[in-house]
Length: 141
Image (cartoon, rainbow, N blue to C red):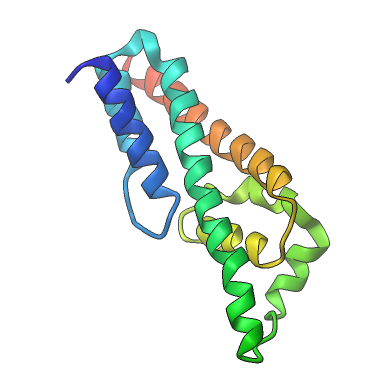
């Protein structure tokens, strides 16, 4: 597979892994690093963008579900109060499996600023991918 095609596959895997679908984006990043070690910095950026956009898609699901839940008389659970208190910065943890998906959805439900959410998601997810790439390079170089 060419470098460009591999980057697109990495993007798609990173995007899908940020939704409720269990895709191994870390494995895709490591596979890319093995095949194209000189392009790893670019791959970290591509994976971060894909994963952040996937997180924002979950944010949108949460944002638009609020209308339907309120129509049915449902209110926000107590756990949302903590997120409301700390705001978008909680999305630094959006990379954590399972919990991160819920955080992104809750941020949308609470209608937190989408650009602040995107920024904190990107920081958390980017740091995770950079650490994974760095650890792989140290251990297997």
